Image 1 (cartoon, one colour):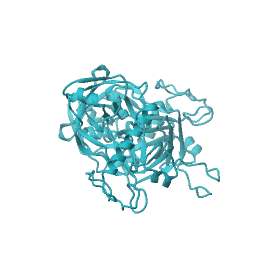
Image 2 (cartoon, one colour):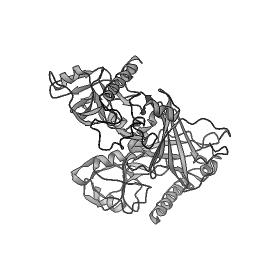
Image 3 (tube, chains in turn green, orange):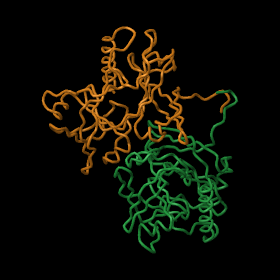
Image 4 (cartoon, one colour):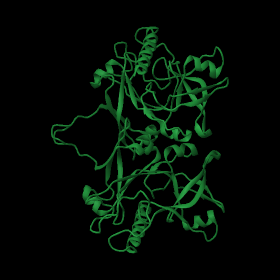
Length: 250
Length: 250
């Protein structure tokens, strides 16, 4: 659990540091083209028209690396090179990819590295990926990797043996404190995500709230989950606290 | 729509014919090893301890073929050879597989054929499969293939160009009339399937009821859906009619 806290703290510090480099009231950072309109200066981060603006994103398989592993995989003195900003300020898809090798000589040839670097390396797969790779990856929240399987990462300059860190990332929602107050939830709570999609609507339970000062409201699900509800064609997405039993006992 | 009706009628006839070959009160057919205990003679088909016994099955990618296409793909005079019985009486995975070729020279090397043969050929993929194959397969209920994309099927003896029939099969539940009465639903209604699974519970809406006299209660979801909720590790599955708004307005 201490790793989870560390990671959250690190992310919050990164976001916070980046926010401080911006002029008041707007975003001076380059941002993904699909970003919503920039909110007014009086609005909480990511809000549009005075309320949270929900984004649901599919996290394709990816890995996080330590500074040391970046140097081993890509060469002495290498750093991650940002290729595309993610929706969360300060985070990016790097130009670098790694090859992942599982047991029984199965492999994924090209897995994107996300930045910035972290205190530990971690590989996040959808369940389908983990079957392809022949690794029985457990559903875990990011950072909670104790006892998870490992794998081999191969880069152009070297190879890293991860003893643990292969997970299927559990669904979660990033949000800031204003979002949390709006929904009446706190960091660590669980929420429900409803997706309306022709002939394949569904409700995801167990959406973990990861709240900090500098995040924007964004649910992360994996490719299996996104494919199961055909997210790209969804007509409606809705986030809500886990429903309570109602008065009529329904 | 007429094809859907035809198919349902054909399936019902097949099941009905097979039931008539059985001694009263039991199943004389070879059956999948995971079948539930044989019900008492007074019980509706598939019931255990006086109530429906819900099974949720993942349909991996597969195809259905016409008699004509079986002969083209596997040689003059060929018929499908049953390899493994499915849970629904009279249906089986055949020994035969086909190679499926999509546009841009992408392919799936081995897709299982299910029997018995049908009046039309149809390829059922998960969304992940359709992405691999480069085909934009729409979510459709089996038999409703008008306007869907085609593909090329390759067998050891020949090749078939399907002009249409590639779908992502919409989730559905087979049941007999006793099951339907138990749940208070009718053929064509929609139900909800709840899956409890550690850190990835979910609720599937839009589960179409396909009721006929000879079916056993079984939900079919695809591999994306099964992976999204980690069905293999599920602690609880529950099927219910779509909930109605409750008295307290909750």
